[in-house]
Length: 224
Length: 115
Image (cartoon, rainbow over all chains, first blue to last red; front, side, top):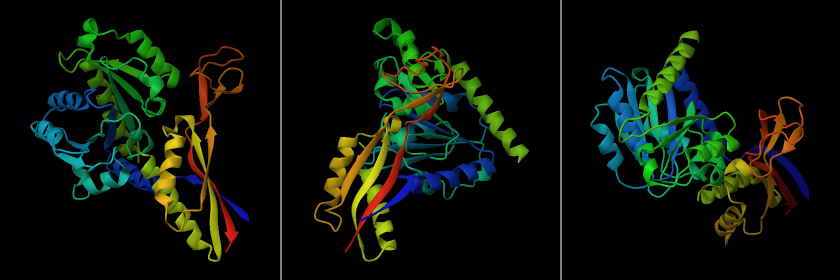
């Protein structure tokens, strides 16, 4: 019997493609963000608000993933930016190859921002690098404040937590303080922004975070 | 539930490695899974069995090694295993600690036998 060490990642093929995508995005100065959450937390609503706030001259595109239907792409297309639906047909997450295929005929030099809306799922998308600059996890106050503890991988790997639906706080037993503490336990130093995509409360803070990211990715390109 | 996809990736790796070593048969594969990998070991074993059943890899055993989350204190450099999500240093109480590991999803080793 012979034992040979392998010492490599299980998903090294996905990570290889993600690495290539990341290099291409950096080369074109594109900020790529990967939005993750459980189903119904408000990823599409956040994107609607985000696209609605962009000037029409901004060079933004969206990829939106779902197991079935192109409902989200239809919702997002009305803002006039390029939107492409990725229908996984059963797969519970997006992987790097799906992104590579979806953008194959896009001219990346026409883009500054690529927003990816992952399949609604707090588990599986955490394992798949899509070449993004950052993952952003959306958690709504109608879910439990212990979500960060139950799904630590997702909260650990996300740079920013958007706490959505804060307009509903008077009606649900959700403690913002506990949710924040739980997120900090899993991911010390995690950035957290509270918003309501219904009323618009808190969204300027999110937009400022985004503008800051866009500016720094453009600066990185200028430096290379 | 992406354990099927992960199990498929593990099997792809087994097949690739087996092809490189003619005259040998893979008997076991070792996989390392961190607590922060977002993967259920039981589900992975189940999927692995389902995918290998009645194939040439049916007799391959899967060994899963769990890795806990580990942190290092930024003040006293103490290295510790995180229990119950408590990332503060158990020695000096410092809140700021640095992530060392615990998100592994790795192929650790292969065991081969002569055919």
